[in-house]
Image 1 (cartoon, rainbow, N blue to C red):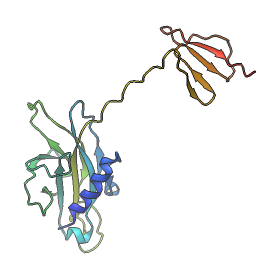
Image 2 (image 1 turned 45 degrees about the horizontal axis):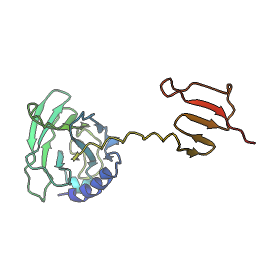
Image 3 (image 1 turned 90 degrees about the horizontal axis):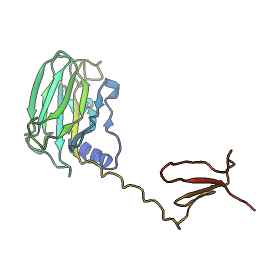
Image 4 (image 1 turned 135 degrees about the vertical axis):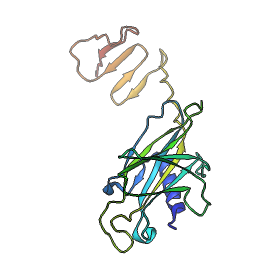
Length: 216
């Protein structure tokens, strides 16, 4: 069995740092479709790996893990596999901890896409990214990765929605903020940059005034 836990540890750190999903299978046509997520938490693809020959040992599988927000396995998570020929099947994360959560054997059913699925009636329904373009029709690369014998590992992780940014706090009437050669107060905007007119209405509500700064 390949070291899926080692990949998970590396990918979790990248995901928590806001980095995009790791994907060394892009040269094999594998892509990630990122869902918007809406107002729900999201199961993000944090990593995709094309198994080396030594890792694969002649198999033709899609190995999958689904992690919670802390990086622990989400047992009983349900995955959907759909192919370009509209073949549809499901799998449940229920493997022992020394194996990846579940797997789909690949046959000649066309390129497959995988996502985590939930009951649409569940008010706490979670959105999911999709890993797509996965198949085994790749050239021979050695004794254990040959045409019809390529495997991939995909890992999903629950990601919380980022906190919305705080609204900017307007400066008080007597407070001036400096930014380079610009001074800004609540109702007046000074600049050393030449302007065509001595007074310009920038905001109809606040009546902000722009005036040429007197260097002298």
